[in-house]
Length: 109
Image (cartoon, rainbow, N blue to C red; front, top):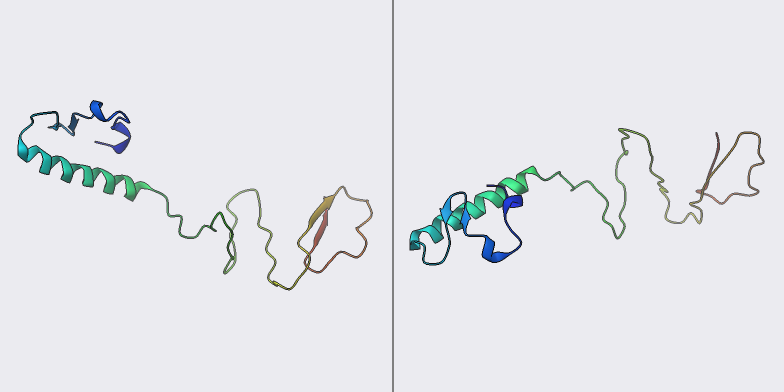
């Protein structure tokens, strides 16, 4: 039984993978149901994607070389002492910004 099949209403959860856990069920069903619950959670956990390589929402530091599997990109400033970090693009033929700070990127498309 998948964890997604469980109800968010506790009273609706009267069995787990066919094990009766309704009121006045056999005492052994509690043990069996707990084991089944643990197996269901383990199966759900095993199906989760590996997120260990992601940067935390609060910030983080890239290590190594990021890889790109589709459109998009990363802005990475290797020096913590660089004041820049702006990313600028413009249509071809325009004038470049004056005196960009170290770490700034400017490109034309």
